[in-house]
Image 1: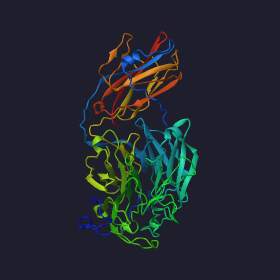
Image 2: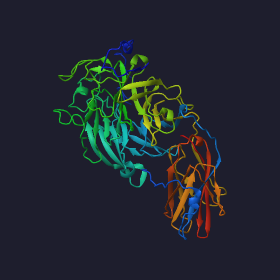
Image 3: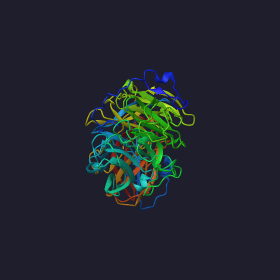
Image 4: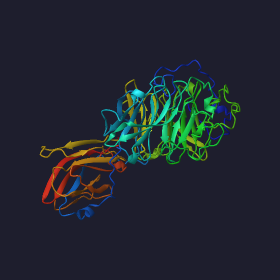
Length: 585
């Protein structure tokens, strides 16, 4: 099983850590299918500024122009399964999408209810409102090499994506070179990227077709972090991971708010003769997936091993220029100095930073997949835990890590409890974080049937929305655009083009059935802690509303009936109703 490595002197030989790990697997070969370390790697939202929650009496007396319409979204809690969950809810997973060919990444910009899914083929798909959208957000298949471990490998949204629409991708081009590029979303369609907007940020020649790494993420410092593999073949024949004159086998950090990119002023190798200033850390083999804890700034790296060990490395916030040892060290095992540059420290030297966890390949783990520290809202008992897995043994594990002390604790095998009721999580290729901090899992259950799962509490309800148009007297003009998921953004659309009157309206919606107030005009206004109100100018056509759904486990599975109507100027028009099931996925 995996072994915790407490903060000992670097590479101290503790017998209990090394027993049974000496068996070599040099004859083992990896199958010709995409894997993070295998020779064949196979809305911008229209943001609406929300007003503070309004109580019904306040809204009822809100002054409105005489000629305006008052549009109220009437939400009546009809029935619900109230689950007052424990502080530490039991955890499981639920499948939220399936049918993908070789998905390698899933995630979203902060606050975005969609999920973006990256496919190795060079395409990005969108899961929206519970449905995988037709077409692609981006398709660069024609310019991506797809052999071995090549392809479109990573995606990162700019921290200010809501305003600038910029996102960054990591792919190998037709010549096998790693390309970091910036694209921009289409100004008129939040579900479509502008293919002509590509700006090349950085290119890194690759001597072989494997070990391209491929991840990129923004840290809490606003800089773009990029992981690079050692260039491939096997056993790093050029020892480039130890060569500060090469960008291969490294963790890079650059500034991309403006292009050409800039070098952060505290990057550790600025001014070092012969060193590339982009380098933040070095001595990595194939760091396929890494992450930064957005709360602490700690960096976690899943580095795929050679023939003996898999490892998780960590760099506490503020520690720069760490050497994780490859190719001299494979985790805590002496590998070989080989062709390393003169002056490279020998095995077990204190210059090397040991991993916080290593997994012997003799246990069946051959490609460790780095994950994320959970910082979501649905599972308070999981906050602060780092989740990771292995592509081959299908085990999902978690641990706690304290950066300042270096102490690792609470290493657990979470596979059994995270087994879904529908589907089977196998060949985990990546983890992800949705727009609200909830953990996603990307797998390759079968070729052409990759899946996306979400970690949720046991008993989590699936959200749903049903339009009820009665006898069809009025055209359907009130529609959900996103599902009512706890901790998510709920969006609705109301078409007011057929209704004469003023140019402004107010909407109220919420999730509560208590303290409702019925006024003589027949409106049902809701009061209570879970009521939301906001106003906006009417376009006279299609208007969008959005607001956050609170994380209240008592709302899990609750059915909410909503209806909108406009009242004013001597005219009252009822829109169709929508029935919503509040869920967690």
